[in-house]
Amino acid sequence: PGPRGCEREAGMPPKKPGKKGGDLDDGEEVLQAILIADSFRKRMSPITYTTPKSLLPVANIPALSYTLELLGSAGVKEVFIVASAHSDKISAYVSTLTSLPFSVVVVDVPNCRSMGAAMREIDSRGKIRGDFYLVHGAVISTIGLQQVLEVHKHRREKEKNKDAIMTMMFKSCPPDHRRAMFAEDDVAVAVNPDTQQLIHFQSMKGQSFSVDPARFEQHPSVQIRYDLEYADMCVCSPEVLCLFTDEFDWLDFHRDFVPGVLTSEILSYQIYTHVSSSGYAGSVRCLNSYNRLNKDVVNRWVYPLVPEVNLLAPTSYSYAHKGVYKERGVTLA
Image (tube, rainbow, N blue to C red):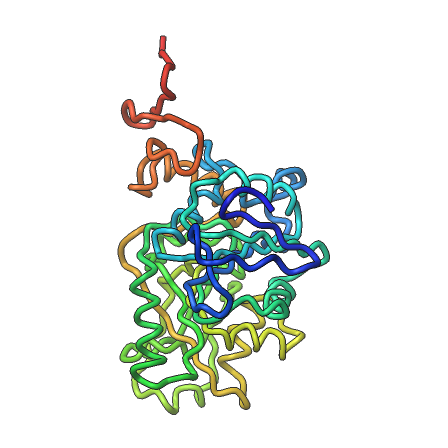
């Protein structure tokens, strides 16, 4: 175990903390988050051969710090970071964050080769006790997560819709400003505008939008949207983990899980959407997006997540003028 708030889990399950010092009792339902640290792709090669993607510096601060700040501001009390590559380096970094207001467990899964396997590993350990945030990789965002969680809970508890197992977060993005660099990130969706239920999810891959007309039978009103970018975050219910365990051939989130739920003739589960027209959302997906994130932070598009906030880092940056930040004691000639 590392300092307070940090714990590493490998083959044996970690010791469950108690209430004192911000820790938690067994069975107490608290807000949790699962952070998948690996993308299980080679888009960031060769720089990820020695450094995990989540620890790549964004404006000289590890990208993971921005994600942990986001989760902390949403009231999360437990974070499980699932790491396959360089899990030792992630654990070492997390162990330095002694002032976190929540506990962090780095789940070391050295043989994990897909997101589906990572979710099955978490499910097998029985740590998730209620609705949770699922974050894909290092996400930098100013979108308020609490509102999405409240809508998700209202849908399941007040409206008695227990089939609503997930709410995916999207950021509106006009087609001429779309930033997808890879075919699987360039998606079009069909949504019920009255309920925000996701009806169809398709990677365009340079082809036309195609959907079975039977999908529209229960939805008198449908919107086809090609102006959305998935924010790499969603609110999930525990059934999501069970589905990954039951459907062992589901490996990828976009290619397997989402289409599998939407097109299943047996499952009655539903996925909903939350579209944010304001706020910032970006993640380290490839070298191009990594370069863009750095520029956005330096140019203050991610305010208040700007360098002079010194997020979870031993830095003392101050804002000098546009594009210039100075560490304390630095003098420019």
